[in-house]
Image 1 (cartoon, rainbow, N blue to C red):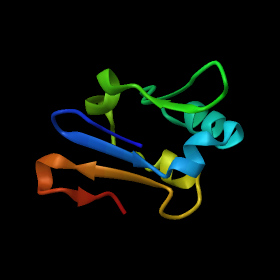
Image 2: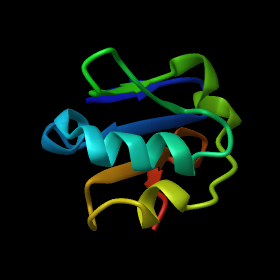
Image 3: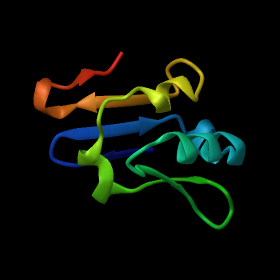
Image 4: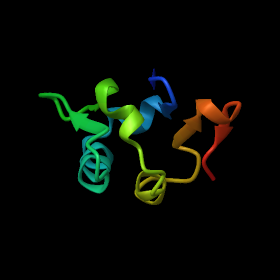
Amino acid sequence: MRAEATFIAVEVDDAIAADPETARRLTEACPVDIYAQDGDGRLELVESNLDECVLCRLCLDATPSGAVKVIKLYDGGAVLA
Protein backbone atom coordinates (compact mmCIF):
# COMPACT_ATOMS: atom_id res chain seq x y z
CA MET A 1 0.00 0.00 0.00
CA ARG A 2 1.18 3.54 -0.71
CA ALA A 3 -0.11 7.01 0.01
CA GLU A 4 1.33 10.36 -1.07
CA ALA A 5 0.98 13.94 0.04
CA THR A 6 2.90 17.01 -1.07
CA PHE A 7 6.19 16.31 0.72
CA ILE A 8 6.03 12.73 2.03
CA ALA A 9 4.93 9.35 0.70
CA VAL A 10 4.66 6.18 2.76
CA GLU A 11 4.81 2.64 1.44
CA VAL A 12 3.92 -0.35 3.59
CA ASP A 13 4.35 -3.96 2.54
CA ASP A 14 0.89 -5.48 1.97
CA ALA A 15 1.55 -8.43 4.30
CA ILE A 16 2.53 -6.02 7.09
CA ALA A 17 -0.56 -3.91 6.45
CA ALA A 18 -2.77 -6.99 6.81
CA ASP A 19 -1.29 -8.01 10.19
CA PRO A 20 -3.33 -6.49 13.05
CA GLU A 21 -0.48 -6.71 15.59
CA THR A 22 1.97 -4.85 13.34
CA ALA A 23 -0.73 -2.35 12.43
CA ARG A 24 -1.29 -1.74 16.14
CA ARG A 25 2.43 -1.16 16.73
CA LEU A 26 2.60 1.35 13.88
CA THR A 27 -0.52 3.15 15.07
CA GLU A 28 0.88 3.44 18.59
CA ALA A 29 4.39 4.44 17.48
CA CYS A 30 3.57 7.37 15.18
CA PRO A 31 3.47 10.71 17.03
CA VAL A 32 1.53 12.41 14.21
CA ASP A 33 -1.11 9.72 13.53
CA ILE A 34 -0.11 8.73 10.01
CA TYR A 35 -1.21 5.15 10.74
CA ALA A 36 -4.64 3.90 11.83
CA GLN A 37 -6.50 0.58 11.90
CA ASP A 38 -9.77 -0.26 10.22
CA GLY A 39 -12.51 -2.33 11.86
CA ASP A 40 -10.74 -5.57 10.92
CA GLY A 41 -7.43 -4.42 12.38
CA ARG A 42 -5.80 -3.83 9.00
CA LEU A 43 -3.52 -0.84 8.60
CA GLU A 44 -4.77 2.35 7.03
CA LEU A 45 -2.67 5.35 6.01
CA VAL A 46 -4.13 8.71 7.01
CA GLU A 47 -3.26 10.75 3.94
CA SER A 48 -4.18 14.07 5.53
CA ASN A 49 -1.43 13.50 8.13
CA LEU A 50 1.40 12.38 5.84
CA ASP A 51 2.99 15.82 5.53
CA GLU A 52 3.07 16.06 9.33
CA CYS A 53 5.81 13.38 9.35
CA VAL A 54 8.75 14.49 11.53
CA LEU A 55 11.09 11.78 10.18
CA CYS A 56 11.41 10.26 13.65
CA ARG A 57 11.93 6.69 12.32
CA LEU A 58 9.63 5.17 14.96
CA CYS A 59 7.60 3.42 12.25
CA LEU A 60 10.78 1.95 10.79
CA ASP A 61 11.84 0.72 14.23
CA ALA A 62 8.41 -0.87 14.87
CA THR A 63 8.52 -3.10 11.77
CA PRO A 64 10.87 -5.55 10.06
CA SER A 65 13.55 -3.96 7.88
CA GLY A 66 12.14 -2.77 4.55
CA ALA A 67 8.49 -3.25 5.51
CA VAL A 68 7.84 0.50 5.73
CA LYS A 69 9.38 3.16 3.50
CA VAL A 70 9.13 6.87 4.21
CA ILE A 71 9.86 8.69 0.97
CA LYS A 72 10.91 12.33 0.94
CA LEU A 73 9.24 13.63 -2.21
CA TYR A 74 10.83 17.04 -1.67
CA ASP A 75 14.29 15.42 -1.85
CA GLY A 76 14.01 13.66 -5.18
CA GLY A 77 12.33 10.61 -3.70
CA ALA A 78 15.05 9.84 -1.15
CA VAL A 79 14.05 7.07 1.24
CA LEU A 80 14.45 7.68 4.97
CA ALA A 81 17.05 5.19 6.13
